[in-house]
Amino acid sequence: MTLTVYNSRTRQLEPLQPQRGKIITMYVCGVTVYDYCHLGHARTYIVWDVVRRYLEYLGYDVHHVQNITDIDDKILKKAQAEQVAMEVITERYIQAYNEDMGRLNILPPQQYPRATESIPDMIQLIQNLERLGYAYAAAGDVYYAVERFPTYGKLSQRTLDQMQSGASGRVEKEEAERKRHPLDFALWKAAKPGEPAWDSPWGPGRPGWHIECSAMVHKTLGESIDIHCGGSDLIFPHHENEIAQSEPITQKPLARYWLHNGFVTVDGEKMSKSLGNFRTIRDVLNHYEPMALRLLILQSHYRQPMECTPAALQAAQSGWRTLQQSAWVYDLPEDFVVDKTDCDKEILAQFEQAMNADFNTPAALAILFGLAKKLKHFDQEKRHRRESNISECQSRKIWQTFVYLTQNVLGLKFPFTSAQEAIATEEHTATLESFSDEIQALIRRRKEARLSKNYSEADRIRQELAQKGLRLIDQPNGETRIEVHSE
RNA sequence: GGCGGCAUAGCCAAGUGGUAAGGCAGAGGUCUGCAAAACCUUUAUCCCCCAGUUCGAAUCUGGGUGCCGCCUCCA
Image (cartoon, rainbow, N blue to C red):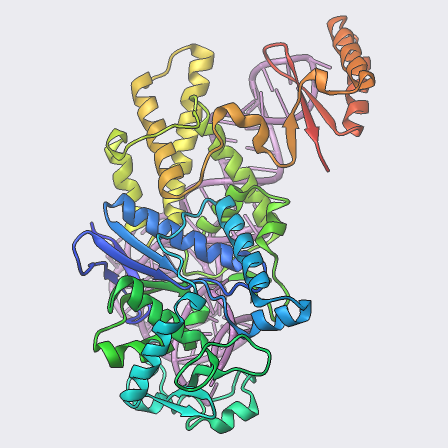
């Protein structure tokens, strides 16, 4: 069975057939760095990270490129508001972006081209478009003439007549007057006084938003790539415009497969800056583990809308604990490596069947949760009966497969066993010596009370310590574990 | 006005013709002095509504209802 993906261009599921054998070129539209990333960004980049990981799992050599938009109206606005150079803003949010992605265990693309580093490529592309009659200059701006491109709208399956220009209520009047057609869009914008500007044949200015992706796709991956990804909100106009800017020049499809992920929603509405209903990744990760968020996102299909509520995050947090417990039935050292060839073939086949259906990660996770349950069951049997109805060898192979698929392919990174104490965000276990004398004394008194079977006193002390944020757990081996709950 | 999406248990969510995955929460049990943890068992006569096609539909067709997205900020 081969991998089938939903192509937004054709609106149907298609078998993925790369152009060049085992090489796949994949371009993901990245962020505009003017603020912290929110859960919508988290979903997007987690989803494409899993797609990339799965393609690599299948043996493809994935050439993964993702741009950084570091010149834009919103960046300039923020720089002006803070009275700092544009670079101060962009560097701050690029760094924040990298931190967030790192915590979510998202693999960095091989290349992260920045708009400001590709200006000459963009200028050249605009000149080419102008020469072929697809672009026209107007008062220092350059616009793309949508009427010149007969198939404009083919990706979002709409025509110029159908579209109600200005429906979003965001078109500036002065700009509208310079355009030949209301849907023409800026390729180059004349610099306003005080703004950063680059020299160009049309005077000092800066590139429009869409042109950077056309230029950078071409520069980094070639004229026609295999997969182009991004959020559904980019279908129109961003990806539509990328096509319009590229295809008249190359006479080749910009991308063979267009993949788009669904939104994160809050009470059924799209999470977005303008609605103000967003939560930043870093805010969420102050309350939940990064892998819990990753799990939540992978528990719904990437094209569906995904409701993100505190209850859902909490459920994912618990689910992540379940998976971790299974990962820890054997020692999981930091440098643990499993190869695909060490895995159980039948399980791999099940996993692939799920993932081959347009990356059905929820179905894949259902398989992994099934393995998790099995592993804990074997572990329990071993503890109680010192034997199990499956061999140690089989159990170990299932475990290896489980860890490999969860960690390497879905990117849900388990904390290694020796660091278990450090993983929980809300609690950690502690040793007796780390507490004040007063608390140490209470813990000792409780131990003595228990030994003399004075349970009412022992329970009273446990209550008292609970109010100080300490939870005492009597374990079957006779030891008492102390958990510190930081509120 | 145009184009498109979604509607499955308390919550999140798979499933696109063969009789409802999975996670979380809940319930019962085992264990424990108790508690916690862990483990075991269990939880939708039914998939927004109506009509139709079919031996058979959550899944296909037609008609409704509700919610949401895009139409030059957006992941």
